[in-house]
Length: 342
Image 1 (tube, rainbow, N blue to C red):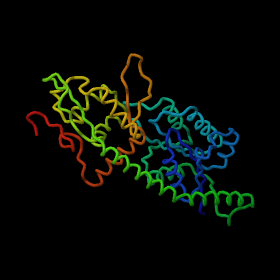
Image 2 (cartoon, one colour):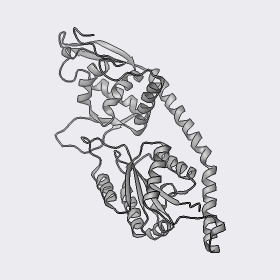
Image 3 (cartoon, rainbow, N blue to C red):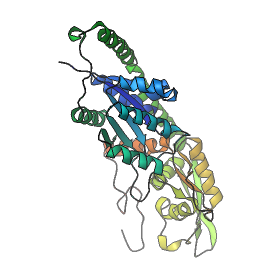
Image 4 (tube, rainbow, N blue to C red):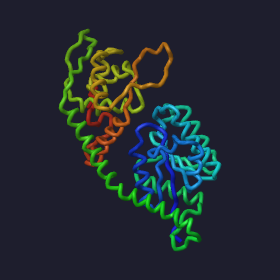
């Protein structure tokens, strides 16, 4: 018997529309019935309405952006949905993106939420790798681990009420299938957006003034495009970095200076560094970090935005796929030449 499942889905974290669209497309292509609670605004409705909807669902799938700040009450609404799903014995799957490294913990409320879900007898938490194949694999493990009655063909339905409900779900599924071409158009728009950012970065050059210890003055500025500056500096912003740390890194990591010939701190003027970061922010690639710090810490902190992480992944993946990339180090695209070496 061909069983179909109704899978409700929601997200925790900002700017996750593309990830939800990919999950909706994946569930539809598997032959099941996806319902996007976030896009439909169901999570903002009365808890009784949410409960009735989840009682009709076979599974609840969540997309959790572990590294993102949360909007007000966003996690609370999703936690309410999880509690209602648990009351109705609806199995849950959390697909975690932006997994934080051990030395950069995620927001505590998100970490506690994922830990509770891992400990739930009907919860499953897995890392999302951003591909349809990865989502299919995770959903299949969810279906196999927690078997549900699902929905069957109208020929085998025992009553007209169930047939009416299945007809309603089929219409919803047909509507979603008609929306699938929009996903392809969205992917094309994303590629066009990346190309526009590349053109903007390559079309603008900056001069990086450097402080040399021997001459005790600002001189010998290094000229490069904003694209080269972003490619070399962006890996430092994947988590976040301070402007003081950036000023120490740029002469060696970006400008390829001899590390024994530079001042210990502020070898790049802060006002110039702020200007370049502002230009990158104007293109949506970076943003100021908002994590709270000690009052005595006067540093400014920056990190890549979600668009910046996507763009960095895009250009690095393009280099890997074309075979033009070499690993960072003394044999990288941008080698650091030391005295008496190479």
